[in-house]
Length: 160
Image (cartoon, rainbow, N blue to C red):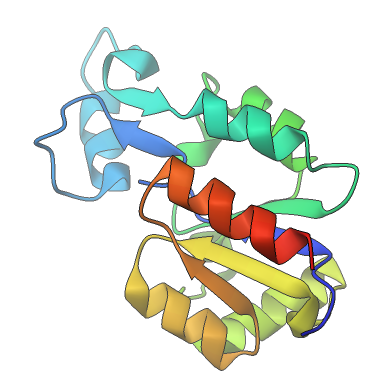
């Protein structure tokens, strides 16, 4: 196994969750809807996993951290500074590039953009289709199930 130098994280339902645990839709759709209703306060509708973000920050000296999400929610002023702090401005949206997270070629394009070989990247996502696409591009992948699970799995991968 190649040395992992970069961790790419998904955002929605990995680091960001709806306040309403019953909400099953896409977080970007919820965001677009509630954002138009005044007064909009981001944290009335969403919860950021600061515990996981803090843990990731302890890894910044050993690996490059990137965020790769589908759309726009990560740009909200209520959370963007926190994400920039953790991911050192390595925040990418598939929508900005006209990409799909289900296309293996786009993970190769992202690897080129961040100047890292695919075999040196671990990709974390909660959606199995995205995980399979990244795997198809040669990235090491971990499907996200919980904070505890991802910390355990990433710790193992990063210690190799």
